[in-house]
Image 1 (tube, rainbow, N blue to C red):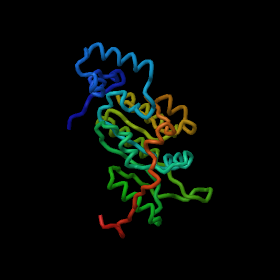
Image 2: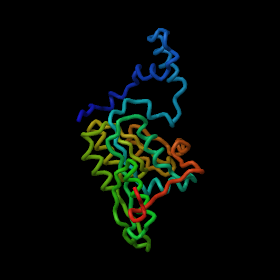
Image 3: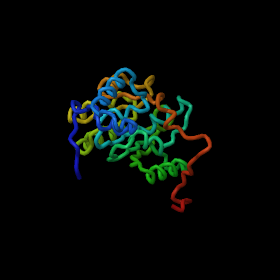
Length: 231
């Protein structure tokens, strides 16, 4: 396995990528074009939806707090298309793993079918059984699992994409940053801890990319359990 060395000070724009994205520049003076492209970049920054194109991201690892994302989708009034989400967060980079962390109710057949579908469509599901809280409802917290995976896998990826707004993960983010990893935090800005934003290399507001990750109203997925699936 070839691992690309990566550090924050090496996050630079690459002229070759800019030129390849503009085939109509063929035949012009490439050096002049590169200068013009850099000037344009400074004057008209790219929208958040294309922010993943700005850096040499190397190998990417994605860490998704499923419960946090679920509540964010409710606030935005959308249903997440997890195929689109994975494609958008990866955005052509080499994907090491995409982890999806969630509490699980083993008696919930619909949820079991959803998690089976996730496993078969590019996600590594990390599940913890829901426990009855003092407030008489079930909940789970997988911050420890997220932090441990981010740190132990850090030697094998260059960029971490953390889909969570929980400030309890700020220490883990800071830890992998000191190991030379670039960290991108993706969450709803209004509910994201300032401490998490402060230690991230890049923050992307989910509200700004919701059009790229929401499920089309006329499409749907059949989340089937192992008992009724023919896959």
